Amino acid sequence: MGIASANLATGSFFPHAFSGAGGEVYAIILFALSLALMFDGRSIIKGLAFFVVGLAGATFGLAAGGLVLGVIGAAIGAVLGFLVGGAIGLLLVDVGMGLALGYFGYLATRDLTNVFVLAVGVGIVLFFVGVAISSKLLELVTAVLGGVVLYGVLVFFGVAPPYAGVVSLVLAAGGFYVQLMKRRRGEHWRQM
Image 1 (tube, rainbow, N blue to C red):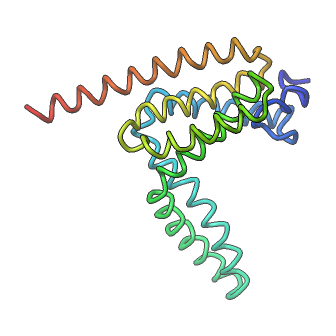
Image 2: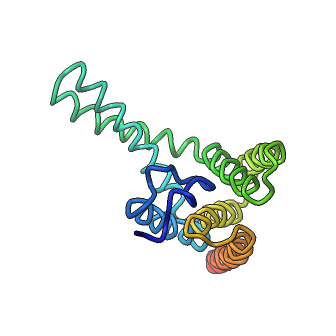
């Protein structure tokens, strides 16, 4: 029996189907993603948006192309769908970051307070904050998003929500600081 269980999976953004070994692999991938977002989010967020939305576009293109032209249409549709979906992902990265921040903020607040109305309110506020500041403070948004994802991973592995919140907050603050220093060093060298 693995570390993760169906009990722990119900309180986070992990579906019940991901309990057990599949859930642990999924959690480890999200753990790595959360650290990457916290400590180097500005560098990876646009590539990540292109890839994720591109996969959705490829799935749609595969189905639509296959329906119209068979196997060749499926291949062409998948490639075109990936490229078009990826381009849309780049254009909508601000909205996507707002959605992700709002959704994960809702889940974290729901787990910490068990007050549905408060969790929805926090999710809505974080959505608008994420959209408004994502391009100006990309480091902050990616660090917070990574911290909230890390919170979900820690809860999945059985860490108590208050401890998971503190660990996530500390690592997100550290990741924001690291990203901010990287950007300042980059601006310093460009001015010379």
